[in-house]
Image 1 (spheres, rainbow, N blue to C red):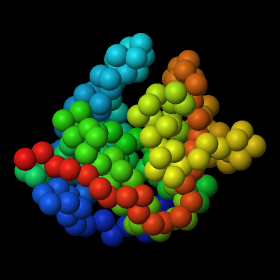
Image 2: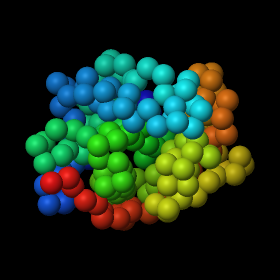
Image 3: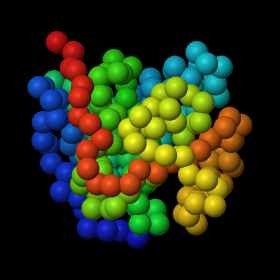
Length: 195
């Protein structure tokens, strides 16, 4: 991870009728792994079985983010995480290392709410991420949230390092892009919660 900045003021503020975004608790990190596994299953349906079968982030890896207040969860009405986002600062931007939502909360705005909270609270002027270019719930989704695809000449040193690391893991087998969203305002908070 890059140099540490002051911790954001993330607090359990309701973002909807019965859901909230808050910092992940240490005891919930295994649940984040389960969310990651479940969120990976749709990749199987589009022929990306290697992605679906990929191991979730390790508990040690997630703990680094959790201890640094950079692991946030979207909770359901019972305060059980149904989505999560981990991030780090990369070249002056808040880089989303992972955002995943359990299928039970899919299409209800959980991912959008997590990204919006990061835009508002990171204290950084932009968000970045790397993602699959042709997966409907990846680059096309982020474009709808205001992200734009970066040209190769626009990639910062830190983003190039991330791309190289992802390639070493075999993720470049499918087309990938780096994306950036300028600004610190919300990306939209419309979502529904299950009854």
